[in-house]
Amino acid sequence: MHVIKLEVMDETNIPELQDLLTICSDYLTFQDGKPVEKDAAKDLLLTKPDAVSFDDKIVFGIYMSDNHSLIGVIDIIMRYAGPDILSLGLLVIEPSCRGKGIGENTHKLLEAWAGVNNFSRIRLGVLFDNDKGLSFWQRIGYKETGEVKPYHSHTFRVMEKPI
Ligand SMILES: CC(C)(COP(=O)(O)OP(=O)(O)OC[C@H]1O[C@@H](n2cnc3c(N)ncnc32)[C@H](O)[C@@H]1OP(=O)(O)O)[C@@H](O)C(=O)NCCC(=O)NCCS
Image 1 (cartoon, rainbow, N blue to C red):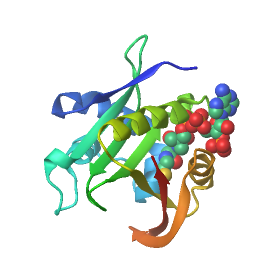
Image 2: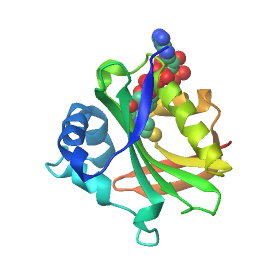
Image 3: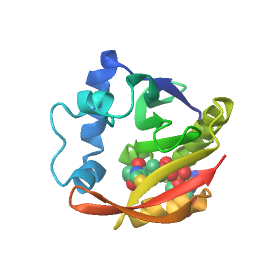
Image 4: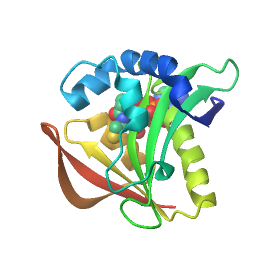
């Protein structure tokens, strides 16, 4: 089992976050339909729905506990879809660390954090054509809600899991 920890990121983490996003350009280019931009890390830290305050947005870095290397990131919005719902924006792990259980362990940490903070559901969107992502979320207990929404040139299915 890989020992990881989640740490809240802020603007001081922009250089390492930008490096991570660049390494994860396989997924981000697919998601956004364009190369990773030079301000991608800053945008990830600052972009949120207009209706949400910055207090309700958190970007967690996923760090290896032994050497504190940044290997992934999670972007969450609290109380956007409902008062007890945690919405997951982005979860991406660097390619060389995928398929080793780190995504599942990350989700366990996030789920525990969400429970302690009184959320009762986690909600997320999976782009059509992200078959590996879909299979990952299904395996760890997410179910499709039936909602389908647009995202840039894509559409995504909404999935939820009760905590
Ligand atoms: C989706 C993602 C976050 C999952 O993280 P991960 O660390 O690869 O996830 P896990 O290793 O826990 O699980 C991935 C697969 O590896 C397998 N796996 C887990 N531990 C393993 C191990 N020790 N050895 C071999 N395979 C293993 C799992 O069975 C799983 O297969 P499944 O999801 O098809 O059932 C990651 O692959 C990623 O960043 N993908 C690109 C971005 C993306 O799609 N994000 C989600 C957007 S909705």
